[in-house]
Image (tube, rainbow, N blue to C red):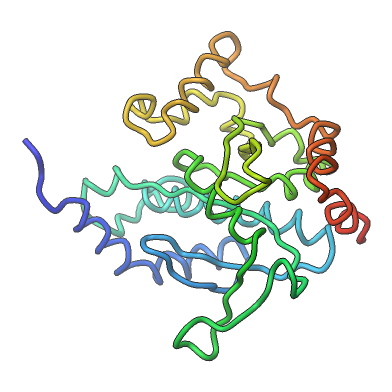
Length: 254
């Protein structure tokens, strides 16, 4: 027996309490990215960074925000006593995130105004498109990140949290050569990744092929050790595609 309009009701509840949740989470995490725009049921933010140390901090803070949202939805952690939605169906909801990086150079990537909104900026360009392409390849409560961002992070202490999950052809990206799908996983997830999936995700999810591959690779020790980021392999990809100089110039900034 199907429950009619349950998804519609859940979505309405989510947007009605969005400001309440976000204000509390921002206060807990102490990080305030700027609102970019809404796309369907997605909320896009951006953060201007001028040095590589800011990039690392932004990714960690974004991961903290994602965890806080998930805890809030499922009444865990700081939110155990708060039934914000008062609806059992809400436990079916979750969130996921995409983090990517683009150099706004006025040529390949540009800033413009959102149509009809004079005081809200928009971003256009080939590197901007990458984020929307990789966003479909991530599971609930997890983060997918762009290859150039992963390369910068691979030189930091959170390199241990990065995993190449798969390679996919993305429309209009990298001459449609296979692009590495890279997840940033929190410590508690990376130690036992099979438990981070719903039992039926390997059957019904849009990325069921990726999840099945992960579960098969984790049969022995529950970890994705062999998928750790290999810096040299990313460098080879960038050099082949002729974008190594752009990535390297970012890396050289303090």
